[in-house]
Image: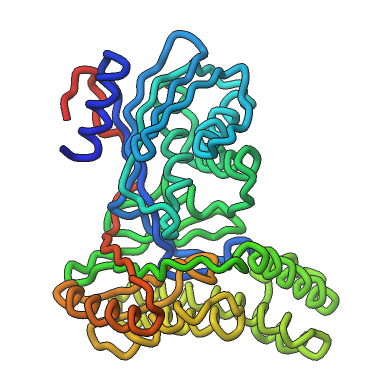
Amino acid sequence: MSLVESAAALFREKFKEQPLLFRSPGRVNLIGEHTDYNMGYVLPAAIDKAIYFAMSPRSDRQCNVHAMDMNDEYAFSLDDLRSSKKGWPNYLMGVVDQFVKGKYSIRGFNCVFGGDIPIGAGMSSSAAIEAGLAFALNYIFELRIDALALVKFAQKAENEFVGVQCGIMDQYINIFGEKDKVLRIDCRSLEYKYYPFAFPNISIVLFDTRVSHSLASSEYNRRREECREGVALIKKYYPEVNSLRDVSLEMLQKSKQMMDPTIYRRCKYVVEENDRVLDACRELEKGDLKAFGSYMIKTHAGLSQDYEVSCRELDYLVELVKDNPHVYGSRMMGGGFGGCTINLIETNHIEQTSTTVIEKYKHQFKRDLKTYVTSIGSGTNIIAVNEHATV
């Protein structure tokens, strides 16, 4: 039985009615790391791993949710939205909270959800829950809220209710993703552009270090502060600058003498990374995936040496594959200090490449490596609209 079939079956068993079914994908970010909070460019894609929702509206204000993956359930009222110590219900209640604050005409609902997005591997299961629920509520209550507003609801749910100050990329690609396309998002204007990414002989493979260094959250906040400090210094020369997105390498060079060397390196990485995203997109337009992949390698070098958010496990994995002719690109993905590398690997060489990497990683770090093979899929969508539909 597939995941969506399991969700539908459990829903029918618990609530004795037919659900509407929704699919909400995870995501990868191919290039453009740590640029989102600097108002720069990112290039994510929705993937084939997803969270599935089985839902129906109620006539009262009660909400009943069941998390398949944890075999746990939670009930709350639209009139009493308070943070739960369980943790996972907050991602759902945060979304409901946005609809209530916006005074939208919603009622309670029954919901069963679960999926195959790995938790903690950097594929954004949290945004899949948030944006997926926002999409589903908009649909079942016929609210006609536009897609970008749903994205912002989902992001605010995480910022305000869950308490994580994430950028907008994860929720954006969840709603706007399209099959065989990556999405370049301008995090300043929120404009976007699709680029083709249909390469039948290439797969996206994640190598999960299965480490999470304790530095991650504190260093993430420090990088944000270092970037702000750099902007404040550059602004003395260039008053029009409001973020690193407004800065060219020439402007940065002219400001270098009054910068601490560390602040300069942080700014240099971000400015160069924005240029890399634009250059990499031009290679996609030409269909040159090897050239595109070369920018991923450069991004990793910048993240490791200038932005200093990598770790020896991530560096080792990139080093293992960067000269492999069957690997077109490789870099760390996400906040850093652990997590996954994202790799573009010829599909018929995945097994051979993965076996070598797994063995060498185990020998080096005495730890098992986990691999995920994924492909680019569509954004959040409804699977069945007829109340009597079978799956």
